[in-house]
Image (cartoon, rainbow, N blue to C red; front, side):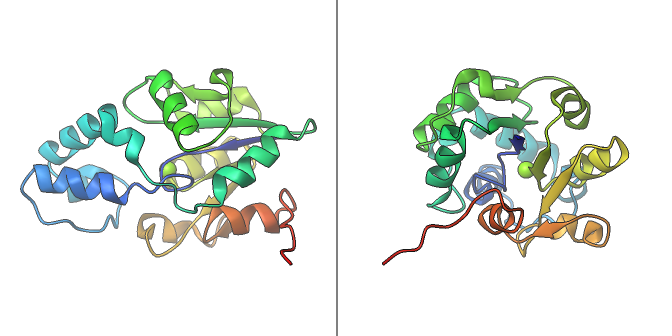
Length: 190
Ligand SMILES: [Mg+2]
């Protein structure tokens, strides 16, 4: 089974980075209600966001769920599974994304990280995952159109994707999605 993951707002919490970008631009932070950043933010905020993504703050981005690195490491260790990380940051610097994943305690190899130019849904068409997890409405729509099996992460922090809830399977977080899809079985604690 080949499983691919988006990073921002699926594995990593984007909020501190977005808040810092607003702060640098001298604007009050507003929750993203639309995916198109230009709807809610000016170019300064976007530029700041790109800078923050590319500097050390990237490596300090918290994971959304402290248990997720452990869960993903179990999947990576499973010989029946192939795990890929596919991001659409404007950086196009997979070395940095790789380092970020490793720093977060995820035992991936560089070959498992995809941060490349082009439309993510097209990249996914080529990678042919059996399932892809994402929060981006553009990616979700692209996957639906191109027959890439996709599950949406949708919660109170992702107001920008709620309009797609009726068209795609969705769960509030990655842990729940992995359990519901039968990919991960939680171990009983004594
Ligand atoms: Mg994302």
